Image (cartoon, rainbow, N blue to C red; front, side, top):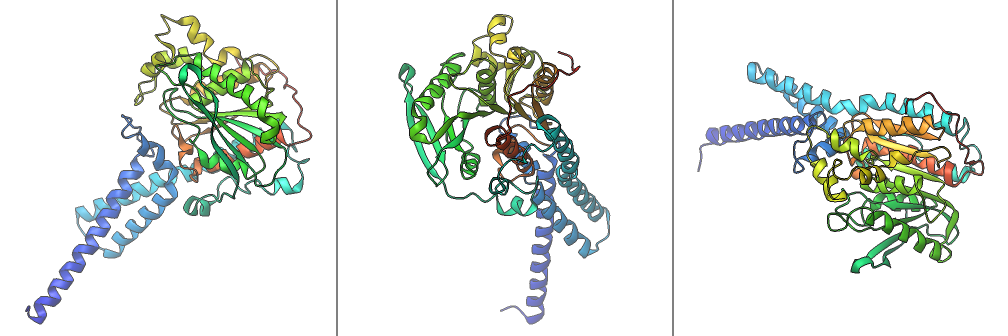
Length: 424
């Protein structure tokens, strides 16, 4: 048995070691994760860190603040202690960057929405519908507790086609109450090589609970099936939806297409080209639109190997297949009298660079089309994988309003804006 004094010393030493471990561990984790808010991922293995770090920034602010306070309370002296405090402060500043940029980013699109859609673009919506929209572009409590999603009806894995023996499926999400609803047709991302209609289900359920029929559709994947197989599958899905619209409670006069990344590319091609259904609006989350430009000007670092992805999708390089690359680029289909477009791009995107989104926006506006660009400066590609993060909260706020205007407002008119002076 240890003497009483030795036992007391052991407890003190143990308590000191645990306290120091907690402080150092919190400091190290906070700094490591916060660095990914500004450091691009060099490989796909590390890419989730670069995507997720800005979206958990409210949590990182809390962690870095706690680590800083714990170290300040110790009041040690020496170079190691000072270095630790500097690291805590640096990590805290990094973690605050997304929240510090949120106000200005919101102000820019809050000005553009009424300028493009009309000063009171939601004024004619019934109060009950307006009350369902998110009240603020960012709700701090939701960043911690999650965004509430009400109950809905869902029907999953409905087979709509079997091209070349590949079973293509649809997921259907509807409000609980039987009725007739505007439809959002959703196309998932995955570099045209992977994915399924289960992707981004939180968003689909969220929108269904707000009075939409959300139809998530499938398509064949590269490299086995190259373009235009994916576009053919989208058209087949639209034809199938048209046939079953009555059973699925879909209002065929109120259809929007929406996609993410590769899915946004297909949504744009369908909307700007030709569609088996009339399309009232398109929502493009970080979709590639100029495939020749994307091949010739890849991001750095290029974690996904953009050129390899495009070769797998199209079967060769732009030099070998220039006309096919042009035919697969939505920007080449821009002309007057297109349905309104909401473009959402991530400012730090290292897969589809934001400058391509800006080029598409300028081309749409120059040809007199209604287009809105939300560029989120701190965000990475696929930011909305964190559904309650700051980036997705902001995007969701304006996506809701854009779709409510396009699909539910009695004042919606498919009238192009006057052409701008933006360069083509």
